[in-house]
Image (cartoon, rainbow, N blue to C red; front, side):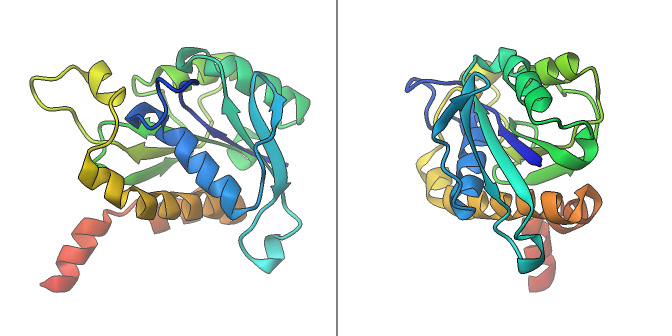
Length: 205
């Protein structure tokens, strides 16, 4: 069983904010795999099914979790799910999806391990799992303007232009999640970490 965890804050106040893009990616991936997040388990929204991508992976069991604790208590939900689903090899069977304001909007960065980088949700997960060897997919939400606070920025909704482009970035992020689960972190990193805008510019020159 593989477990994909999208991070965010519960409730309508935070719906659609930059900080909740982990939820959006998890929901897109679940929809692509026809997994209904209809169960209330592990203090979160939960569903399970099979990996949607590729015939060879059709029998691969996948679960999707959206913790409904506050962001900085995400580890409570994740640690409970990991124990119940008997996920012992985090590097192979667990993926955390979260926002990152140090990345340009829509940019993806997959890593097999590391620190939290100031993200409180990921920090709580790493502490409760007592491991830094937890793969994560960061989705760029962009830096705030110089006169804006970081907290205010991540709790704001996307601009009109960003909202227009968001679906294509969510689709790519969903494919990245599937690649991590099916082919492993290293392969997915090589495929999805490059800056697409830079590649496009190179192709035009």
